Image (spheres, rainbow, N blue to C red):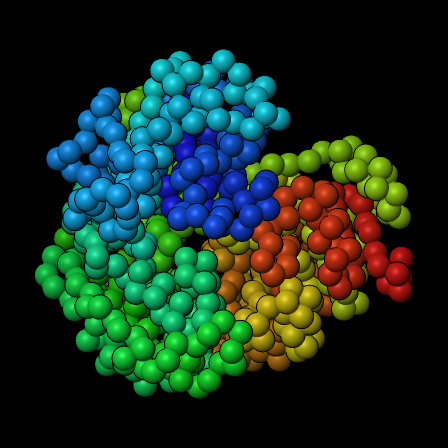
Length: 577
């Protein structure tokens, strides 16, 4: 039984294909269209399904859309307009502004938003771009697959719990918005989820963080991680302001008052303006209060469920500083965060959820041990493209050893290997890699990627050596927690130590990615350091590279020294062979 999961409701459109409980493939649409987060100059992106991501999932399974049994869409429009929804007869005005808008709809374009989702089955059957038609041929709105709308936060929860290593656990989902819910609590057991509680719009920790992100001159729904990084440079001078905005109530509930940021803190920073100390302080303050609030929610949830393990998902769960504080100060023994915790991951969750319900399965066949679920390119494909491009390249005899030699010599490498990662982090398949030994490496990488100076770069470390370099380090394969750098080792890896002494670590075992592991082991033999700098293979405003063409274009249009793509090496003039 094949189940296709789709996310196309807000942003980060994606697709996932599940066969009888096992995940075959998962991809994000931005990797193919090269439009970051799928954001176009229209509200969200619901008018277009992730056709390319769907095509890639079908291609990896060698099937057509007509072979799919179930389609799971990670949003339920019936929850958007309760009490007035009939999928068979639902109609909406073409021009919402010319008609009275129900109070439930928060903006004039919401009727079109709902209408687009209601019509998604027809879009899937008839709307694929012409060059993708082969795998969509024969699809009809009335089948052969059965269509399922899955509540957004159920999809988030399923993406965390059903992919986790836990047979039973508490589950918390936190994001900006779903149909109506912004925070939800569940207790997971086997393949079931029991809802424990929820928080409804307009009260949203995710939206509050978005508002602060926009106030600080960044893009909301995409730049929140910059605020998290900025917070380390500030002082908690406005903590009481944010505590007055977020009010804790009983049973996991909270309310958020309208923040009125300009009234509280003065004029907003315009994009591109210099950052001032007050901006750092606001970032630090909202980060601290977010952590405090989610800690309170976690403590309540543990009491309510009695569970010892916690699964997290939703865009807020990408805040690795918050995750680390829950890990260190919270009531749970273990925490697992799904690597595509944002909206892209709801395609995974919707597919796993519908698959489990339709098979009536009590046991699970899948555990997400690695994120490598995207497209892959054979060596012959890569070589053919490089030859066609008339680029100088050579085949390496020992990819890990020769690449490690380049890294130990201070070179910065583009690294393109195997199946692409699912989720926002580059984790060793589409990465830029460098030595952490040079204290100037962070600045060099930020210059290459045209990033702000305050942005840290992250380390990848051999799993069995992680505790030697980072305090209390355990397995962290998805780069979703921070740890303190050991003070006695800090001068050996200055490039990955943030201003607050922490690093957002990725641990890697050989079972997860043999080539990547062997590269770091080779670098350790040559340098005595079992850590590399790992950042995403892209430049500002661009998604992570997906294809050999993307990798070569990024390499030649940025100051990278070398590109290791499959077994082949390309180097810039002046970099020794």
